[in-house]
Length: 415
Ligand SMILES: *Cc1c(COP(=O)(O)O)cnc(C)c1O
Image (cartoon, rainbow, N blue to C red):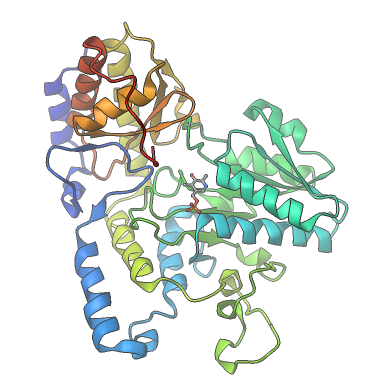
């Protein structure tokens, strides 16, 4: 049976432990919600100060050139690319994940309509996908009309059969936000291609959480968040990946001037720029965008292989300790035990999941709650220690043993 002393010994041996000092976390908090909003890199404060006081305050509009504001979406994209298995010139950091999904989905449907897949009108995805992904797909299909529709499948096992001769694009979230289930990206992409469909991957819970190799997997398009595992800051712009071999055929309907071949020619006619720039739309929130770099700098101090090794060790430890120490309580493990099928979070159901999570948060153990009855715990190897996992489980054990939670507690707008 693992003891707290064992956990401290593992922390002393942990090659990632020094990186915790790169983050500002409040004392007394065990933060297990970096899958929803990553912690703040210490450098973000000075970077925000620099952008606001110097670049905006002193240099004013000259900063579009002198501070590199205009190129920032591409510069950040190039810096993020290695974490995705993408290449330079294939990623931009811009807009929200929802908007990038819209652009990528529309472009995928357009590619099919212009090619051999002209008769294909179905977007295949999972009912358990994050709702905005479903809403954006439904909105696009309804708006296009002309027979476009969304097909929802109820389990990973049903996916292959649902990807048929009508399917234009398979749009999947690589790691499920609720269960932590990780799809086999390469196998599903290969299956989609064999059926004549394109594969669009949402990496919201994968980027910075699990090793990714979009090129090796043969993926067609991808999007994802920077404010979760990548520590970009609340509401930080998202990313979109268009591999070089699809860029010429990539046409998206949000054809704003930042995607124009010559934005400052101020020409009345639209002409998309060559390359990844055609995935852009309009002017970006520069203060927020600039902070994304602070998170990426921390990732450059280590490797996704090291992060993954610790992530699996943390999630294995959490599962083992919960099962050993809280085994008398009605907790149900939702997240797969198989490493290959697991992201960097662990979810447990409990009949009073919301109330138990509220009690944990009141004690400084911050996870979150997702319907139905799921307590979600995110494990971010850059700043989570083994001892913190032990302490979190001890709080959970005490709350459950003492029934120290309020079933009647009211809920905040954001759970
Ligand atoms: C977090 C998340 C989003 C968030 O989309 P926003 O446009 O940033 O609100 C989208 N999709 C998935 C799968 C997510 O996990």
